[in-house]
Length: 200
Image 1 (cartoon, one colour):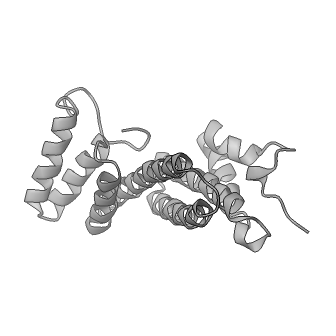
Image 2: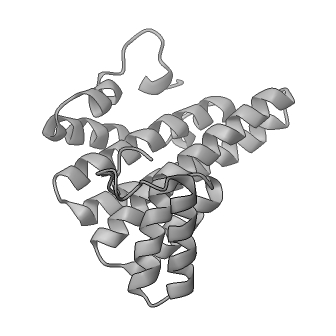
Protein backbone atom coordinates (compact mmCIF):
# COMPACT_ATOMS: atom_id res chain seq x y z
CA UNK A 1 0.00 0.00 0.00
CA UNK A 2 1.37 3.41 -0.97
CA UNK A 3 1.10 6.07 1.69
CA UNK A 4 0.69 9.54 0.24
CA UNK A 5 2.56 12.17 2.27
CA UNK A 6 0.32 15.12 3.22
CA UNK A 7 2.63 17.46 1.28
CA UNK A 8 1.64 15.80 -2.01
CA UNK A 9 -1.92 14.66 -1.33
CA UNK A 10 -4.10 16.79 -3.61
CA UNK A 11 -7.26 15.35 -2.06
CA UNK A 12 -6.77 16.99 1.32
CA UNK A 13 -5.26 20.16 2.72
CA UNK A 14 -2.06 19.93 4.77
CA UNK A 15 -3.28 21.91 7.78
CA UNK A 16 -0.08 21.43 9.79
CA UNK A 17 2.14 22.77 7.03
CA UNK A 18 -0.16 25.76 6.58
CA UNK A 19 -0.31 26.41 10.34
CA UNK A 20 3.48 26.22 10.51
CA UNK A 21 3.64 29.39 8.43
CA UNK A 22 0.40 31.15 9.35
CA UNK A 23 -0.36 30.84 13.06
CA UNK A 24 0.90 32.27 16.33
CA UNK A 25 4.22 31.08 17.62
CA UNK A 26 3.00 28.44 20.10
CA UNK A 27 0.59 26.84 17.65
CA UNK A 28 3.09 27.18 14.82
CA UNK A 29 5.84 25.44 16.79
CA UNK A 30 3.54 22.47 17.38
CA UNK A 31 2.42 22.38 13.73
CA UNK A 32 5.96 22.72 12.35
CA UNK A 33 7.19 19.99 14.70
CA UNK A 34 4.48 17.62 13.46
CA UNK A 35 5.51 18.31 9.84
CA UNK A 36 9.23 17.89 10.44
CA UNK A 37 8.82 14.65 12.40
CA UNK A 38 6.62 12.88 9.85
CA UNK A 39 7.71 9.54 8.46
CA UNK A 40 10.67 9.70 6.09
CA UNK A 41 9.51 9.64 2.45
CA UNK A 42 12.08 6.90 1.81
CA UNK A 43 10.14 4.65 4.20
CA UNK A 44 7.17 4.66 1.82
CA UNK A 45 7.08 3.86 -1.87
CA UNK A 46 7.68 7.16 -3.64
CA UNK A 47 9.42 8.22 -6.80
CA UNK A 48 12.62 10.25 -6.47
CA UNK A 49 10.71 13.34 -7.66
CA UNK A 50 7.92 13.04 -5.08
CA UNK A 51 10.36 12.26 -2.27
CA UNK A 52 12.41 15.30 -3.28
CA UNK A 53 9.34 17.53 -3.16
CA UNK A 54 8.47 16.23 0.31
CA UNK A 55 12.02 16.87 1.55
CA UNK A 56 11.89 20.39 0.10
CA UNK A 57 8.61 21.26 1.84
CA UNK A 58 9.81 19.78 5.13
CA UNK A 59 13.08 21.71 4.91
CA UNK A 60 11.11 24.96 4.68
CA UNK A 61 8.97 23.88 7.65
CA UNK A 62 12.09 23.04 9.68
CA UNK A 63 13.55 26.48 8.95
CA UNK A 64 10.25 28.13 9.90
CA UNK A 65 10.28 26.08 13.11
CA UNK A 66 13.76 27.45 13.85
CA UNK A 67 12.48 31.00 13.36
CA UNK A 68 9.55 30.43 15.71
CA UNK A 69 11.86 28.90 18.32
CA UNK A 70 14.21 31.89 18.05
CA UNK A 71 11.28 34.20 18.70
CA UNK A 72 10.70 32.27 21.92
CA UNK A 73 14.43 32.40 22.85
CA UNK A 74 14.69 28.64 22.54
CA UNK A 75 18.05 28.88 20.81
CA UNK A 76 19.31 25.30 21.28
CA UNK A 77 16.11 23.91 19.76
CA UNK A 78 16.28 26.53 17.00
CA UNK A 79 19.79 25.43 16.06
CA UNK A 80 18.63 21.81 15.90
CA UNK A 81 15.71 22.81 13.65
CA UNK A 82 17.95 24.87 11.35
CA UNK A 83 20.37 21.94 11.13
CA UNK A 84 17.44 19.66 10.29
CA UNK A 85 16.45 22.07 7.53
CA UNK A 86 19.93 21.80 6.02
CA UNK A 87 19.81 18.01 6.26
CA UNK A 88 16.43 17.91 4.50
CA UNK A 89 17.70 20.24 1.77
CA UNK A 90 20.60 17.84 1.20
CA UNK A 91 18.11 14.98 0.83
CA UNK A 92 16.09 17.15 -1.57
CA UNK A 93 19.25 17.71 -3.63
CA UNK A 94 20.05 13.99 -3.69
CA UNK A 95 16.58 13.25 -5.10
CA UNK A 96 16.73 16.24 -7.45
CA UNK A 97 19.94 14.96 -8.99
CA UNK A 98 18.45 11.50 -9.53
CA UNK A 99 15.37 13.04 -11.14
CA UNK A 100 17.42 15.49 -13.24
CA UNK A 101 19.01 12.67 -15.18
CA UNK A 102 15.63 11.29 -16.21
CA UNK A 103 13.61 13.74 -18.28
CA UNK A 104 14.01 17.29 -17.04
CA UNK A 105 14.91 20.14 -19.32
CA UNK A 106 17.94 22.25 -18.49
CA UNK A 107 15.64 25.14 -17.59
CA UNK A 108 13.88 23.05 -14.93
CA UNK A 109 17.19 21.75 -13.60
CA UNK A 110 18.49 25.33 -13.36
CA UNK A 111 15.33 26.51 -11.58
CA UNK A 112 15.61 23.68 -9.07
CA UNK A 113 19.28 24.47 -8.49
CA UNK A 114 18.45 28.15 -7.90
CA UNK A 115 15.67 27.22 -5.47
CA UNK A 116 18.04 24.91 -3.61
CA UNK A 117 20.88 27.46 -3.46
CA UNK A 118 18.56 30.20 -2.19
CA UNK A 119 17.12 27.94 0.50
CA UNK A 120 20.51 26.60 1.56
CA UNK A 121 21.66 30.20 2.04
CA UNK A 122 18.54 31.02 4.09
CA UNK A 123 18.88 27.91 6.29
CA UNK A 124 22.62 28.46 6.77
CA UNK A 125 21.84 32.04 7.79
CA UNK A 126 19.29 30.94 10.38
CA UNK A 127 21.74 28.35 11.73
CA UNK A 128 24.55 30.92 11.73
CA UNK A 129 22.57 33.63 13.52
CA UNK A 130 21.40 31.06 16.05
CA UNK A 131 25.01 30.01 16.64
CA UNK A 132 25.91 33.70 17.13
CA UNK A 133 23.19 33.96 19.77
CA UNK A 134 24.65 30.87 21.45
CA UNK A 135 28.17 32.31 21.13
CA UNK A 136 29.32 29.30 19.14
CA UNK A 137 31.54 31.35 16.93
CA UNK A 138 33.18 28.58 14.86
CA UNK A 139 29.80 27.05 14.02
CA UNK A 140 28.49 30.52 13.19
CA UNK A 141 31.46 31.13 10.90
CA UNK A 142 30.87 27.87 9.02
CA UNK A 143 27.15 28.46 8.45
CA UNK A 144 27.51 32.14 7.59
CA UNK A 145 30.46 31.50 5.25
CA UNK A 146 28.30 28.91 3.48
CA UNK A 147 25.38 31.37 3.34
CA UNK A 148 27.41 34.12 1.65
CA UNK A 149 28.98 31.60 -0.73
CA UNK A 150 25.49 30.47 -1.72
CA UNK A 151 24.14 34.02 -2.01
CA UNK A 152 26.83 36.67 -2.37
CA UNK A 153 24.28 39.48 -2.04
CA UNK A 154 22.91 38.28 1.32
CA UNK A 155 23.46 41.45 3.36
CA UNK A 156 22.32 40.06 6.73
CA UNK A 157 24.61 37.06 6.38
CA UNK A 158 27.60 39.30 5.59
CA UNK A 159 26.83 41.41 8.68
CA UNK A 160 26.49 38.37 10.95
CA UNK A 161 29.68 36.89 9.46
CA UNK A 162 31.50 40.10 10.35
CA UNK A 163 30.33 39.79 13.95
CA UNK A 164 31.28 36.11 14.24
CA UNK A 165 34.70 36.60 12.66
CA UNK A 166 35.41 39.51 14.99
CA UNK A 167 34.52 37.43 18.04
CA UNK A 168 37.12 34.78 17.25
CA UNK A 169 39.82 37.26 16.35
CA UNK A 170 39.65 36.89 12.58
CA UNK A 171 39.77 40.63 12.10
CA UNK A 172 40.72 40.61 8.42
CA UNK A 173 37.76 38.33 7.65
CA UNK A 174 35.51 40.48 9.83
CA UNK A 175 36.57 43.62 8.00
CA UNK A 176 36.10 41.95 4.61
CA UNK A 177 32.57 40.84 5.61
CA UNK A 178 31.60 44.29 6.87
CA UNK A 179 33.06 45.96 3.78
CA UNK A 180 31.07 43.62 1.53
CA UNK A 181 27.93 44.29 3.56
CA UNK A 182 28.44 48.05 3.27
CA UNK A 183 29.10 47.78 -0.47
CA UNK A 184 25.70 46.12 -0.79
CA UNK A 185 23.88 48.53 1.55
CA UNK A 186 25.82 51.49 2.94
CA UNK A 187 22.95 52.31 5.30
CA UNK A 188 22.53 48.81 6.74
CA UNK A 189 23.38 49.75 10.33
CA UNK A 190 22.37 53.40 10.20
CA UNK A 191 18.89 52.84 8.78
CA UNK A 192 17.52 51.13 11.92
CA UNK A 193 18.22 47.79 10.27
CA UNK A 194 19.47 44.90 12.33
CA UNK A 195 20.49 41.30 11.86
CA UNK A 196 17.36 39.21 12.13
CA UNK A 197 16.08 35.89 10.89
CA UNK A 198 13.13 36.76 8.70
CA UNK A 199 14.73 38.61 5.77
CA UNK A 200 17.91 39.84 4.16
